[in-house]
Image 1 (cartoon, helix red, strand yellow):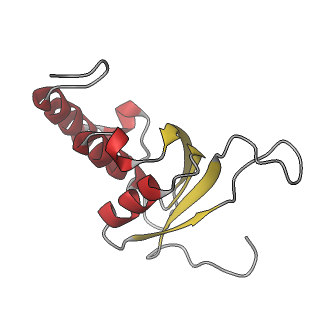
Image 2 (image 1 turned 45 degrees about the vertical axis):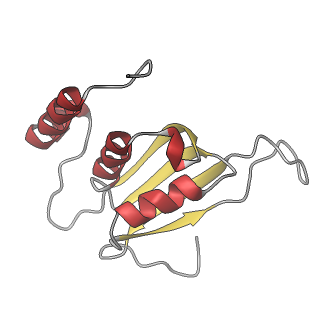
Length: 129
């Protein structure tokens, strides 16, 4: 039985076909020689991988692979979902994530992190970040 907001397998197949056919139409960048593509988006409550289905993870990986550097907001304290993405990216990317956010120094905040995924073929991590 589908939960509210879930797509059928046929709908997911249609989504992936459309993204592959015309990524620019859906706001994804088109790669040109000599360019580095940088993006940012929010993944609502990214945490435990069990809270999303396999097609959702495939969709997130598809989007990440459109960029050389991608910042993601709202990654939760549980970083197992980030490790799931990293594994699904098959070694093409590395990840750097912030400590949990707070409203002032020492505040535990809401437990969200800012995360950067970067394509190792294109981006070399230096001393200044």
